Every structure is written in C-alpha cells, then in structure tokens.
Image (cartoon, rainbow, N blue to C red; front, side, top):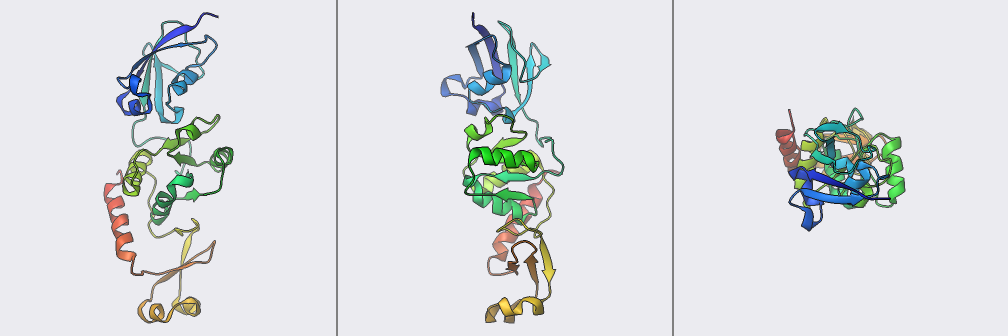
Length: 240
C-alpha cells in the first residue's frame, strides 16, 4: 500500500512530549492508510490522555479516524480544569508518585496508590474503579483502553500537587482521609484510644481521629504545622 502523508500541528503545551527534532510543533508523518489518527499521534510520543481535541482541516475528528493523504491535523491540549468522565474526580497513582499520593489524601482527595502493581493491573483498576491514572511514565498512558489518565510533568512533589489540582480541580476536604491507606477518618474520643498513646501524647493532646480502614490513630503532632502549610497553600491555589 502507498503510505499517506499527514501534517500534524501540535499545540505548544504538548510539544515537550515530542522528540527534540519535532518540537517546533509541525510534523510531517508517513503512515499506512489503514492506521488511525490516534496511532499517528501516539507514534510521535504523545499519549491520547494528554490530547484535548483533534481537528482535521479545522473540523473535529476522533482518534479512530483514518486519515487521507495530505490531511492537516491540529492536535490540541486540554483546557484546564480538565473535564473527566468520572464524578467525583478520583485518582490512582503509580509507584513513582507516593509522596503526591499522601499529599492528595491529606487534602481529602480519594487517591489509590500501590507500589507493587504492573501496568495492566493499574489500567484495569483505574477503569474498574473509575479513577484517573496519574503517572510520569508515558508508556503507561499509551496502554489500550485506558479511560482517563494524566502525565505528571514536574519532579518536585510541591509542583506535582499544584499541577494536579490545577488540571483536574478535585474537591478538597482536608484532614478527612488516612495518608497511609486512603481510608476515611472519624473523630474519636481520647479515652477510646489512650491505651495506644505514648505518655507524652496523652499529656499534651486532646484531639484525635481514627481511620475506619486500617485503624491508625492521628493527632496534631509536631509535624502538623508543616502539613497545615501544605493544606493552606493548596486551598489558596485551588481553582474557584
């Protein structure tokens, strides 16, 4: 079969995903006539989870569109906050995002996290539980049939948190989830947990919460001020 040649024009927010030689944004690509537009985009390194819209000659197109020779394709980024097919917004994070998972849970965002799951298991869980799969591994986002995902670009957890909140705008309910297991926290009277406390904690603390899932007990310890700063910064920066 004679290959078809496409001109793909990538929006600036997507260009960092392209190979360096393509980062000016316009790519001329030869592909088999039976290949889809989605295949063309992903073959250049851009997961479809990062694409907000595809337009062929300025008309909307779907990833399964089979392009004709000479078609001009605009590959647009998502508008933020991004709409996802699930409500409320919930997340599943891969092994590289443990600190981000704990911070999202601190803010009361339903966030599943595992450090022992392979890629097919993560995609299956994200789809089954209607979660957005967050990862820094672009290859994971290329997995077939993934319903919703996002590439986390920054290296630092503070920046990662800022990006996720800006992109997906999840509802924030600070101090309601267990940072360790994602279970819901319930206020508990001191006398119900005092046999599990160190003497110094019993003497200085009066406010406690317990996880319904893993039974961990929490109180405003020495690290509370640092965590409170994370919560306040997130609330101030959250989309309104």
